[in-house]
Amino acid sequence: MKTLQNILRKAALAALSLLAVQAYAQTDTVAAPAATKLPAGGRYVWVPDSLVSDVKGVIEGKAEVKFHAPDPDKDLVVVNGDTVSQVLRDRNLGRFDRGLFNYLFIPKGSWQVGITASYGKYSASDLQILDLVGDMDFGITAFSVNPYISYTVRNNISVGLRFGYTSLKGSIDNMQVDFDEDLNFNLQNVSYRNESYTSAFFVRQYIGLSRAGRFGVFNEMELAFSSGNSDFTRMYDSAPKATHTTFMSAKLNFSPGLCVFIMDNVSFNISLGVFGFYLRNEKQRSYMLNPEDAEKYPDESGNRFTSGASFRFNIFNINFGLGIHF
Image (cartoon, rainbow, N blue to C red; front, side):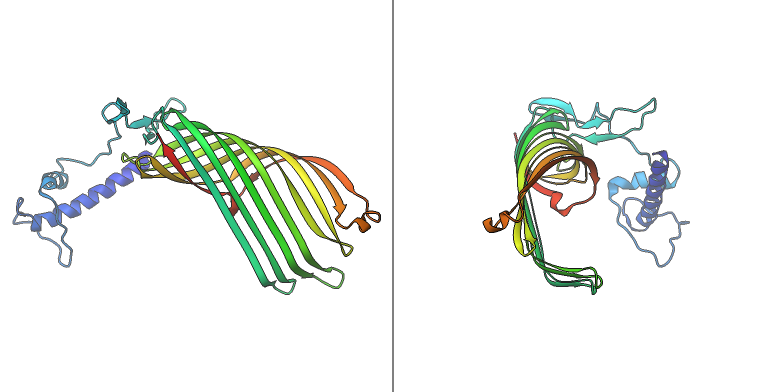
């Protein structure tokens, strides 16, 4: 932190020195001394009269540029009739004061209702990858909508509940794979459908980026419980076969994001689901769609339990939302 401050300080001194030299040649309030010679070929920058004395003091060594951290006891604003500090100091980890702070963004006692949604679609027709995979014709569509309500328990920290619905559909009309003479096949009439319902509890911590209170970033931790079902249909021995799955899952997700107030009480936010843990239990049943094939291929059923963690960027986990604050 001190190294960064020193770099910024030196840069500011250099900029002010350049402005002061140029101000001597152009301002009417401070005349340039006779001994001052400006380098030829330079550019002139206008300096307001109110800054001439400060710039002159820096050049003459009578003043210096210092970084002053905002004072929580002096930087005050009025929120809902109460006078509160606009600067929120972060709690120190250890004995040393790191000097970290953020600005008030969402005041304590505020309610927020809103909705987030995501939509993604990808399709390919007559696509060929080298000479191995060709004649691909497939499409994927994902959609989710999540209404929520939250309450700010502390300045810039809110807790809330979220409910969601997610739908995903995909199909492969045709795909040819040809690695060699022993490994080649053709996929046709493959489809997948998944829908789920989610209830979640989340905690969101905001960091205000300026005194204006318009821009802020946040980190959200979410504990979600989901249930749903899916159907997977494909051709098996030239006959259609389907697998129906029901599942329940629990997830702990971490999602960073950006929040912008587009109006005094309306905010726009975008979040990215990049990291999380999950537990999942599912039951499956596979069966032939045609009754005449059921005798030759009897039904199969089973269940499994899985767990794990994921750390990746997924285009289908980009959520856009609007919130109303009151």
